[in-house]
Image 1 (cartoon, rainbow, N blue to C red):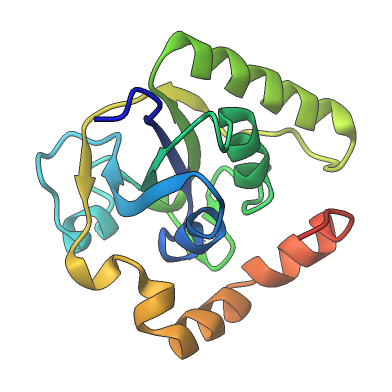
Image 2 (cartoon, helix red, strand yellow):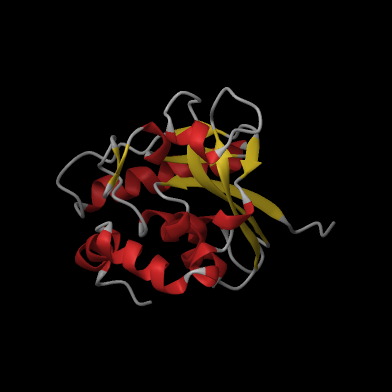
Amino acid sequence: MDNHIELATFAGGCFWCMVKPFDQQPGIKSVISGYTGGTVENPTYQQVCSGTTGHFEAVQITYDPEIFTYEKLLELFWQQIDPTDAGGQFYDRGQSYQTAIFYHNEFQKKLAEESKQKLQESGKFNKPVVTPILPAQAFYPAEDYHQDYYKKNPAHYERYHVGSGRKGFIEAHWSDIKK
């Protein structure tokens, strides 16, 4: 395996909406939708949605940090979520839709904590940034039909992205960012 390949794991609500922003960046090798942070091995989507496993819907990103740094990944992550919402994301409510950064080493933890503090101090949000920073745990890929959903079902993906409230929130809070 390439020496310059690392993992990043982010929970940002519905994992369908967390793949596309990262998948389209240089240096990103793969973005896998899955489940992490829970107590059941190899959980199913139905188990995770039941709220009984403790898992988050998340994406695991394999990337080359020499091309796309972890700092850039963090910046892009914050721009996909409402970091002030502890109850889920947008239309999706419940523990499995909560946000989190799962760090894979102390360097990622330090950078994640710094980026969270910077976002809090930026004044962009008038409520506290509540996204937790947690140690990475076992990551279980989601069922095949959840992988690359934006590519497989583009019309439904776009309706969901808009209808969930995510697209409007991102435009309202991050319109000053060049896409």
